[in-house]
Each structure stands twice: as structure tokens, then as C-alpha cells.
Length: 293
Image 1 (cartoon, one colour):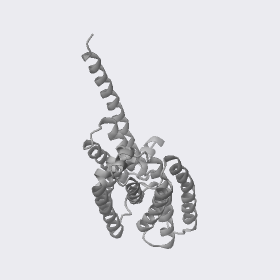
Image 2: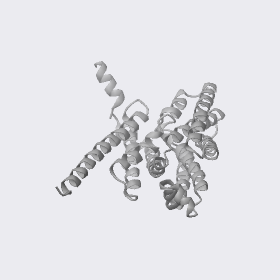
Image 3: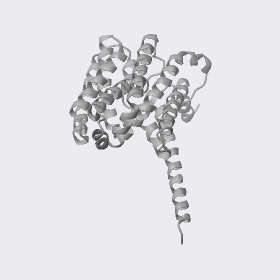
Image 4: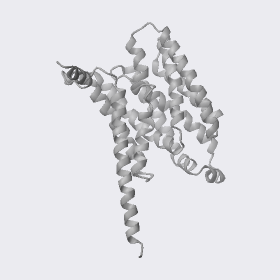
């Protein structure tokens, strides 16, 4: 076997695939829920220019999960606590974009440092440590599934309730505030919802690459549509395709799930960017041709 064959076998291997598929049934269900949550929340992440906030929250979510791992308590609960703390601080102290970025820049290294400290103190399996950073697909047991699905339901309910006013406040906050929309309260509430969504995503794709679920799918959808209906629909479809495709591809290999998820997500974004540019050129050409000489 050549070196290339060995590397390919590590990345893609479908030996006993049917038997292995039974091991990730919970992960596939959790992935579908995360794709739905990430795709919908990502629409507002893009509209409100919050990708940096997602990354900042994920670092403290990682710290919370690491602390829970060290204390041998529920890792999902620890991740949620860390995310909510970060989201709350950003929501309270970061009303303006400049202030928000400064707060996030402070939180990120602090959360990462705490996470590394807790993992250094943890004497258990190395795979558990690595999984918090780069994702894992076979560790979603029944208790974690209950937490994941329950928290996903809370996020979806919250997004359903605030969708219309949050869309208005995200598109034109000044006009929305003038018309009586509680812009500041909605902003803080969405940060809390975003914190929950980040905590959920960390469990599957890891803290380092959570942007691939909460930013890239929505950014890809925004490249090909501006429809308030099609944008969230496509964002969810892209997010679900990325996470489920990543799980199914990673199952046969021996490397973490995150490279698969991020590659699929990036490929979708690149295709949408090309399609969007082509559509814009065609639209421009039609307008030029329609103008009188």
C-alpha cells in the first residue's frame, strides 16, 4: 500500500459501513436538529454582522464543556452555561459594534485559556479532549440527546416568537425603534438564543469550527437570494446538508468530523458565490439591453 493509499484510507473508508451506521443514529438526529437551529439563527448572524460574536461565544462554550468534563458532569450543560455567560456579557456590554468587538476580543482568549487549563487537568480519554475542539460523531448518548433536542426546541420556539420583530430590527434598527419595537431587548434576547445555538453546535463540530454551521450556510444562501422566505429555507438546507454529509463521510474514516463539515459547507458557499455572480451579470446585461439607445 502506497502512502497515498494509506492517507485516502484514513479519509474515506467504507468497510463495514452498514454496521458503523448504527453507531451514529443519535448523531444523525442531533445533526438534523443542529442544522435547523444553525440555519435559522445564521440568517440573523449575517443580517446583524455577528460572525465574530459566534466565535467568541464558542470559546467560552468550550471552556464550560471542558470544566464539565473535568468535573465529570453533563458536558452539554457545561457548554450551555459557558455560552450563556459569554452571550450575556456581549449582549450587555456590546451594544455598539465597536464595543462588542472589543468585548469579544477579550472573552475569546480568556475562554480558550480556561478551556486549555481544564483539559490539561483532565486525566481521562484523550479523545474526549480532542472532540471538544474538532467535533465527534459517536459520543451522542441518550442523556446528551435529550439535552440537545430539548435545547433545540427552546431555540426554535424563541426564534419563532421573535422572528418578525427581529427581522425588522435587524434590517433597520432606527426605524424599528421609532415604531416602538424593543430593539435593545430583542438584541439581548437574540444573543442568548445565539449562545444556546453555539453550545449545541460545539457538541458536533467542535469549538474551533462552529462557524461552519452558524455562518457559512446563511452566507451562502444570501449570495443567491434576498427573499425573506427563501433565505432561511436555503440556509437550513445548506446547514443540514453540511452536518449530515459530514457525519456520513466521517463515519468510515479515522479523522474528526469537522474537516468534512467545513469542506461541504465551503463548497456550497463557493458554488453559491459563483452562481450569484453569474446571476448578477445576467441581470445587468438584461437591464443594459432593455435601455433605449
